Length: 411
Image (tube, rainbow, N blue to C red; front, side):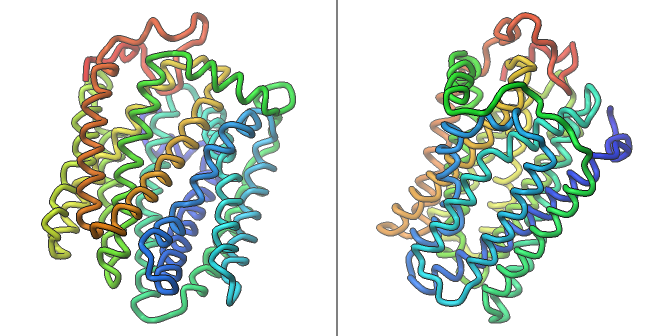
């Protein structure tokens, strides 16, 4: 599978793509509205950052307890049910007079649900698409995230700028989640769970230990999680940095991410992909160093666009993760990546908020960007080693990884 046209000819890919796109738009719309609402009520950059990204803290709880369900529940029922739960959560957040503590409790519950749905979704994607289609399909999904974030943040920014209550945006988010639930329920076919047995905490721990036992996989996971999480911490400070123009900065970030994912997923030759991993991860952080000078909005927008192109490294690292993982564990492996990534994003947002409380948003962004550069450089040697031998015998090649790309060039 080499073209987007072939991809969208797969019947079940279309509703899965549509539902995910709608849910991303719903999440970005509610995230900006909620962050603005909390910042307006409290004046706290920390609470604003937690309101936007704090739900990701529950990802680590789900990854340690519930992730074995990713391969052991019927995917259609699970994904549609999760969308309905998010719809109910958005309705609750829109309730007038809800205390900040209650809002954060709802967000934590949503994060616990998300800790499982990532693995279910990406494992289902591997089932739906024929061999060779996963990388292209995931690339298109990532590109959709960029487009929908642009839509969601732009709409949210307009609502904030025109003085419309953020609660209306939360109601709009609830409607979108409900629409996604309908797409999943009536667009997907009924499928049995991908793995036998009942989900359990014990099975989750056993699979996590197996995945984490490989040194090459550990390096890939850390490279996917830490630099990304630190830069999302920078993004969490857009509202305090530019309260009246945060939507512009979020749109700039989504545009950059869209360009980076399109380039990495569609245009980089397979033999050269690994060589771009480190440069893209450095690109993710270096432009944010300009915030040490507290740049005006046009300069800040350019820096954010350039930096967000570096998120394309995540797609290349996921390809490497698949090559290092037995086929029977790929749903769990991708779910662990998703949960760990979102957890580190929440950590980055919280650290950013704490630093900004004492130094200011621009300085905090600079500190986190510098830390991201240092982590990237520290992890690079582990990613330069050949890794084909680390794939367990009999596991087969992962979807989307060609035979001539089994041992990528050094980064």
